[in-house]
Image (cartoon, rainbow over all chains, first blue to last red):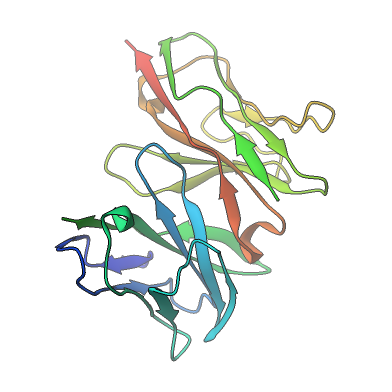
Length: 114
Length: 110
């Protein structure tokens, strides 16, 4: 499978704990995006990378959230001191503009904060 | 800021009947409009985008700048069209962030 992969697919944690998600984009895609989707809503943009550079962050990305893409390949999204409101599906997407500019999505990581 | 509105959360249509999923956008510039679809237990995937002007799986969508709409249409619904459909916009499609509507769940009644 050469699509975008995400790990883990499901994560249950207690309030106050830290969690980290991983996204592996399609090989050689230089753009990587993180979105969050809550129940009944469409995906909402969180942040995106061009290679290892983080180019934009949404105001949804509070200080408790941090994303990295250290080598320009896979990316991690960490949430510190999780809150119940962080419960959502976290989606990753990748693209390779300008010739392959469709954003391809991964299966998502479903986070449940108890 | 970009905003995308899908007024219908749920839509049920009989097999063989025409389908129209509504989408309106608000943006002062010239965003790129698109439709993503999510079938049961599958990931989001691009259905079509307005600049390509393609017909995918029998679906078409015309950008109406006067009405700021990008409705998705299909003349004859098929059971396999049952899915969640998201309309969205992007300033530079794959190059920057995408803004999605809340989605419409389409159910095709056999």
